[in-house]
Image (cartoon, rainbow, N blue to C red; front, top):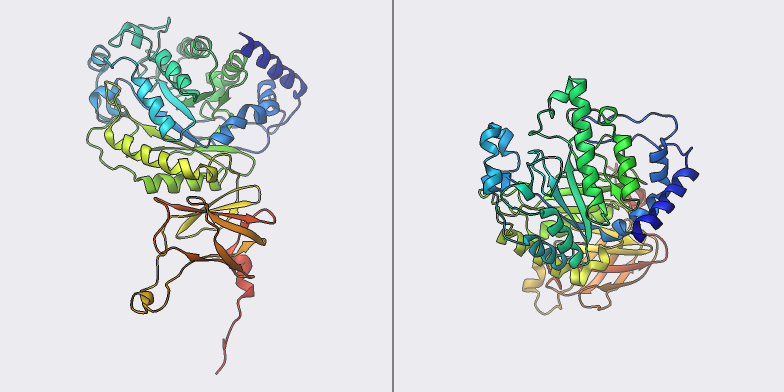
Amino acid sequence: MDWIENTRRSFLKGLGAAGAIAVTGNVPTLGSQASQGAGQASSIEAGMNATRARRMAWWHEAKFGMFIHWGLYSVIGQHEWAKEVEGVPFPQYEILARHFTPKPNAARDWARLARRAGQKYMVMTTKHHEGFCQWDTQLTDYCAAKQGPGRDLVREFVEAVRGEGLRVGFYYSLMDWHHPDGAKCKTDEAARKRFVEYTHGLIRELMTNYGKIDVLWYDVDWPLTAAQWESERMNEMVFALQPGIIVNNRNGLPGDFSTPEQNIEAAPEGRAWETCMTLNDSWGFNRGDDSWKTPKTIVQNLAECARGGGNYLLNIGPKPDGSIPDESVNVLESVGKWLDTNGKAIYGTERGSFDWNSNAGYSRRGNTLYIHQHYWPGHTPAAEWLSFFQPEVVIAIGGLKPKVKSARLLKTGENVAFTQDEFSLRLTGLPLQAPDEPATVIEVECDGEPAISHESMRPLWPRYKVGMS
């Protein structure tokens, strides 16, 4: 196919030209991941470094993706770790494969919801820790095509995602509870070789059979090191088959991006990162988990990821038949409506230097600052009884530099009056009620890159009568 050949040539050209590029820094990764030496990068890492900016351009623009955890554990409906948490023997667990009978093309509903939610890419669990393969693999009968579904669920996912114009991502768990060598490989070299070849073979199928894949999301490298997984050879194969792909850091190598989980933690500057998070407290379908995040929380998290230059991969756990819990639909549709108006403050934004604010978040693009006012100040109590005054809402941002040129509400496009001194920017004449929910965004144009530092203004405070008798 042209896309493979053209991109392959570009990747291999970059790989050859960058053979001596060194790995920069020590990137923290999750799990039992091998450290990278201080010497020269391997040829595959050098090739990744040389082509990373081009391969990841769409991802940095996208900012918001959908994660999907769906498998045999969905039938149990008590979290994706049910097999291990409940100590279910595998002969008993395998019975679930016959009862996993999702409705046709459930992935179409996921993809349509992702598009309405403003998400730009989707990552599906092709194989979770339970070892069940969601595609028509030639390497095991423990797969969707030969069990209850009777068809290739990965192919349905790919077609649905592409049909909505979104990017395609595959999650793949290296850890495998089902394979007979999945734990034995830790201490038995023959078992390790068998299991590594099985693993590489499954990944090869995923990278070969479905056209262009945009993201490969490895998970849990227990019980082997990167050297034992032969992770460099693994990535070399992946990029030979999918030169434009991006990969994460969970096969023991740094990959293209870091993956904080269930918390927002920006990587060091210059390192791409993506927070993955659940909509409730479970990744897989859990019928008893009603701890749903609100649209306000999701919007706050989006702003916080954007502030640090990262992405937000938000999970849904479909039911066994593939239908999406109503709570997930309602939250994501609310977020999508907000992004219809305020997407400018999220998509394509860049890392910013901004101190904390108890009422607002920040993002930026170039010299434009976006103030995400999560808690609208309303009017002061005094205005309730001083009714003969026209109450006024003021939002102040302390420690903002440089000079502000203009401000406007993204929701309405109305200009916002402001004053600015060495201490703060004061946005005045704002309405009593928040113009938008769950957050109001104010677009502020500056005459240079905006930065907010509380510490920088502290020495400027006038001090009165301190130490005087």
